[in-house]
Structure formats: structure tokens, C-alpha cells
Length: 57
Image 1 (cartoon, rainbow, N blue to C red):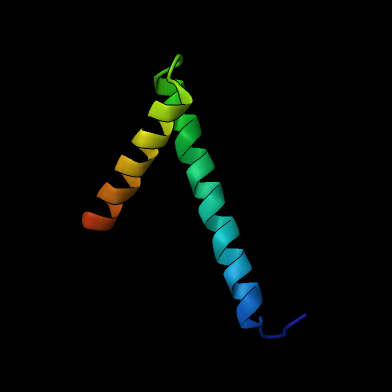
Image 2 (spheres, helix red, strand yellow):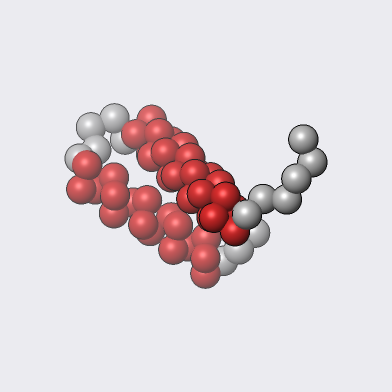
């Protein structure tokens, strides 16, 4: 199966990959901070993703 992906398929894959990355990040934060609230968890995810955009590897 060697066909090109449509632009829509590419977008769906990119969104799915982003969702997976956020879930992995959230699990890591929860492992470090067992009693973190949902609000603080979202805040921490936003901080970490913003940091990555400002300081890429």
C-alpha cells in the first residue's frame, strides 16, 4: 500500500500525534505530582509545551 496521503489525512495524523504527546506529558506530570488538580495539570502542560516552542531541542 504505497499511496500518497491526502492533506486531510495528514492533518488527522498530525492532530492524533499531538494528542498522544499531550497525554504522555500529562501522565508524566501526574506521576510526579500524584494529587495535582485538573486545572494545575493543564497549566503545567501549557507551560511545558510553551517552553518547548521557545527552546527547541
